[in-house]
Image (cartoon, rainbow, N blue to C red):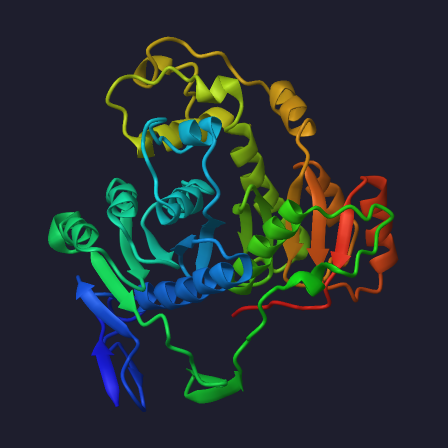
Length: 390
């Protein structure tokens, strides 16, 4: 047996925590720091996600994990000028593909990504390490690190930053087990990875499904595979933009993920991009201020108390402004880990610019859901695959 002792279990009072394999060697090496139980859950789920995204799309992939669900996941599509502003990346900064994927994954939901565990599909280079180094994060897992990248990451968090290396060739057994309350559960490993044929069954009048929408739906489906269920995911431009995880009802998933997608879409607004922040304000403070600036019900009046955050009083983005902006959005993709039981999910998705939907189908009200998609001019695919993850 190969075994690695961990800092502690899910909580500090849960000792004797470890990971192990009965045969062979563990595929994970600790290069720096001392991981905990949740760190390893995030790392191993995240690694599977990015490995499968890379396999499905051929693009470098990254994910930002928090509490065993992705806060964001993305592939390496080059950042445009607006996205660089949104993600606080200099217009002159040169980013490698894996760095670009990470910036996108982290930028999907920056509030939720605070203190994340990162997974990369490719070797972490210096370009990516620099992007990681500037963020608040608990650790990273990748199949390798350049010498310069590893040195930079080892110095993070006063030398305690968790750096893990995964064997990219490792494949698990076909059967997986877990123990709950002293009882062992066994099931086959979920080997589903989306391919072109999974988007063939278009059930709506609108049959248009361009390649870029298939890519975004692929990103959403792979993210859902590693998101605590029930789950719904919105995606755009090769990245998740809203993940709704662990809700007991599907409409609550759709609303939660949709609200996050709305914030991502609204961050493109010129009033947000041009907020006159005071000098020296950290990225984390900017994230908090933007969240409050865009909130319908503010915990703090960041406009009324503008002197703390801004050089000058910013223009307010009204509810009417926000609604008009969101109503102008199109081309967002949405996937669900199980069927939509009612049309309310489609109606809510339409408010966040959704044009493409992928779900398993199989509800007694499938026809109602299809009719709703037709009314909104959406393209809907029934792929017949449920993706629950617990």
